[in-house]
Length: 609
Image (cartoon, rainbow, N blue to C red; front, side, top):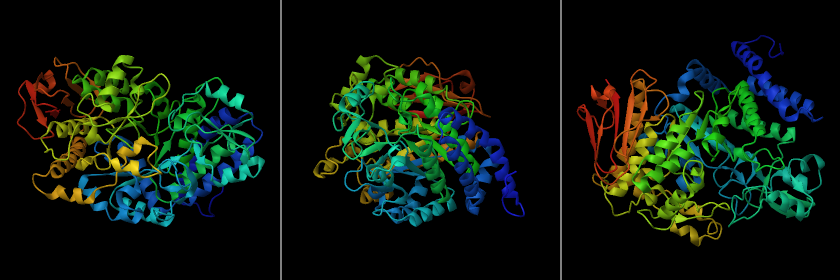
């Protein structure tokens, strides 16, 4: 037994119990990663001391949150946990501005706030905050660490949670670790990966997938102070960390622990697939990466068991699933990227086949984890993510439809990895063909409503991207800003238009109709919990090719979603369980009798009686 206070408290006993159960997982994963490293034992001993110290120092309100979640193990899978993601400055100016918008978010039905990177970035271009200069400070333009803690407290009082972005694959070259490395400190030089000459860098580059071939080609950047080519997967100012060094593993874990003590209830592990580097591979989704995540999860659970981890892994489902953990738990959540992309593809085709295929694959998710379901995010729509599920010709057709104006979309083509098809940039409203002068019953509005209706019906958490709830359009002005003009993703990173948001209160306004739809979806998704709806979404066959039908039937009452991806009405025969009587959850319409008629881009949710 490890000594704590002179008179143990029930909380001390709980910490000891968690430590006894979870520390062996940390040790075993650490041994797999660093067993042959002479530095490992000292790092592990220091980590153990720091974990216990942090666990016993955890603030009382956060302890209570941990205890409540421990008492309800199924809480993660409860329907209706709507999340909302945004850049702080573009949403409300700064953190105190966000605190002033919590009534708006509560009105929308939001349960989780996921601001995009807000920790202190490098000066100038920081890839939208993804080049972090200090993990323990907030971007001074947005506020202070005290402001962050205050926001977390406000959210907790409302029954809401804060998910923070932690950029764990790389730091800014201005980070203190990199500064010390450039100054010649051998300990910190080993925090990064440097190849000695251009030939070595070129040889490794040929093994890798170039992430930004147009805006930042190659994965290595020469730096004279480092005496060679620094590994820079993304941009030259973002230096990849060397996770073969056990000190780096411990440093990033302590960042998570520090921010958890400030009230963060979750962390998005940015660029998680890239953590481990190994010659002869693409350095993505390697087994050691999954070991790192499992070790972090176990260690964090000793200190803050109620905190969730979200894997930012925009990969095939086969590569994403291990992030949920194997013999030990990993991330609690992962982006349901393949299904998201497939929904847009199905919308372009007016045929749900690709959505059915990908939904069946996503249903293989292990039961301990949950999907984060989304329609859009701050990044591009990557058609190559569907390469394992559709032929190259389909990928090209979808890319052209959304990025080259060959369909209803007002999106724009973006760069692509070698051999792939261009990705697509654009806000969801623009991709759906919604124009500012349209009404709430236009085809564009119906397409947007359809996609969000589906992600609220799937198992997991639905994510709203800032402004979709009022049909916010593309931001063409980004091209006039020298810091943003070189990256086309800023097309879908607009300023929140609060004057437009005020129209949500005007009867008949597009914004009012959209906001009402989003609010209803959040409310109805929470009602699914009362019906006892549970289990993964599994596609079922229906006669209409344009209709995506999926069933969730592992709870008290079976649930069926029917979604029409075409601009023509579709009639669907109901399965026997629902034909005998069902409740229309979305619209409260009379119980359907044997069949449902879906209008263009129509959607219905049914719970069997």
